[in-house]
Image 1 (cartoon, rainbow, N blue to C red):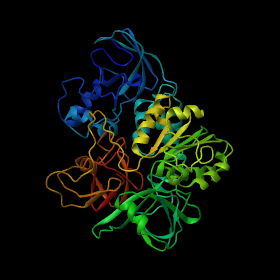
Image 2 (cartoon, one colour):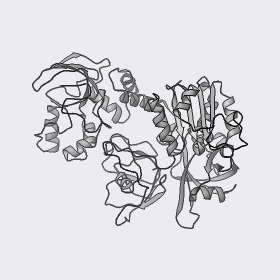
Image 3 (tube, rainbow, N blue to C red):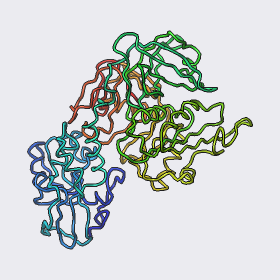
Image 4 (cartoon, rainbow, N blue to C red):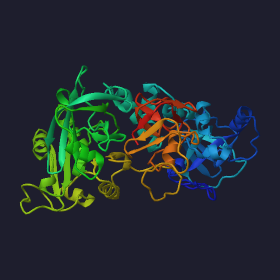
Length: 545
């Protein structure tokens, strides 16, 4: 029995990476079995080894189109998308290259959506009853997402094909945006530099009782170009205890106007915050990476909601600067929602008020969780509570807006769950995480996250691998096969899916150093990025992990 979500007795094992109405039934072809037997020089006698529900005679990937509808027995199916690249096919086949080979050899297989439930059986005839609107073959669709330099005209056709799953449509929209966006090159701003560049501290400014800003400028030409709003930079300095190097990343909190980058640091108990609060003054020189990151304003005319708490204000403040500078964006509704403990710990208040006045359609809420006696409600703050989804509903924030969140981990996790609870889709929630963030390991049962640490056992003697966000530096060992495996051995949070250089889920900013790929990725990452699932260091490297 073919059901809306699967076939009776043959459901998906990994519902994080597979499943749902658009990935209900996986299809693979007998002809591809015969092809792989020749390529791999082995006999494939067991059907289903490619993870498919239906092994079919016919329906080649280079002829079947997205949106084609087929009648099989008592059920009606629609082709919804190519196979999602997955490391599990490598496990089934005993060959870790398979996820990449399925793409490079243009034999991915595809998914059916079940239009009409019904009984099917071995030997049933497969009859096409309708052709897809844009006539995009499975092979061509797969190539648009996974192979380099997809033609823009084909991306536009794919983006309007109604049968594609929402996830693939979002991917095509993102590729179109990337093709039309001249301000970014991978993880780097358009005007970038490799590794670290020595900059001068132009000024140090106290923003609140516990936040200081450090203003940086170039010593020699070229001048610093305006970064993408929401970017961060990495700073490197001798460790104050006299041993090793101090490496920290901070969001840029201004618009980079007039060739000045401003970072803002909250005093804490860590070595980094103490160093930048107590040991830095105007005229000092610091080694600084080019701006980078993926937390940036998305194009469109939807309302914009900035949600931040504490020092999490910094990247969204730079976005607010960008909105004011881009007069064409001034017709968008903007919601500024910020939480602090009290007025003494509320940085950038006058600056934010001035920026908000420059925008015509703005609503703002300032929330103090522990206001002082001198903090007056209605003058200094609006509500005495923590920011929550229910507070947003009271303000009338539309769930169709684009949400930009930054703040402590607890603030983010609770707010993300709350936003989803009131109907905000995941694709409209954009976050910047200070620190290592969370892992994404599809199909692997979650376990409590440990603090990053050196790998167990004998340490390596190869190049030094620095995980900047996690504050960890270890030596490379040939006992591991990739930077991804090293990160996992250190419990550094990572994201991955295919593990063979196909899907780019693991793409990571390479702040400094050189890597060698084995296997070679299907599509090389952008300048300034690396695919840690198939990369090994050839020099000391610094990773944004």
